[in-house]
Image (cartoon, rainbow, N blue to C red; front, top):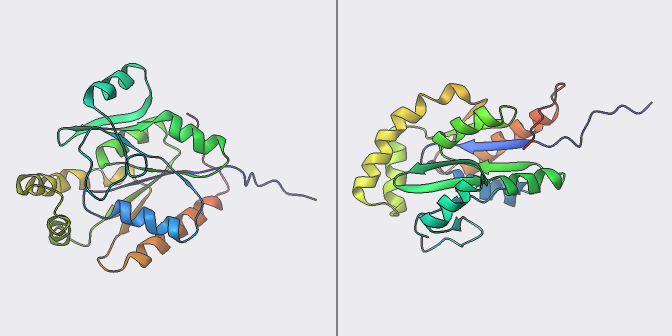
Length: 203
């Protein structure tokens, strides 16, 4: 007798956390480890950093174009963060789900709160720094933010931690131990694949 466990059911995984905690680095290492997923590329109006690639790290567009896409209801979630817009395009999520592959979305905490209301059956993972001091050091070493922005991001940390309860999992991303973080996230994905009651996300 063949038992149908609906193994084709794909996950939507939302990775969030404070700015500077290492979301991009973690996702890149997960990909390098061989995990197959469709990474949703966020659309933003902020300036492209020197090391970033348009269409890979983000889709960089103007504020006028972003607002036009809002009017066309193209975003699953969008928000204004630190004076710039960020949005998760519906087409990107559908592309992954229609391609029979897990979908991974990276958003800030504000975005995760919105997504929790729209796609509650997604898997929500919060990346935590070991301490506020550690996060402050990471942001300063990144040298991508002005000093006033560093202070703003640190003040936001307290508010973001208040939203921890909406997440399914919390993973501490220790400095210089990225492999442990990735191993934990992969274990979460494996466990979710073994759920008796499957998560179902429709867009």
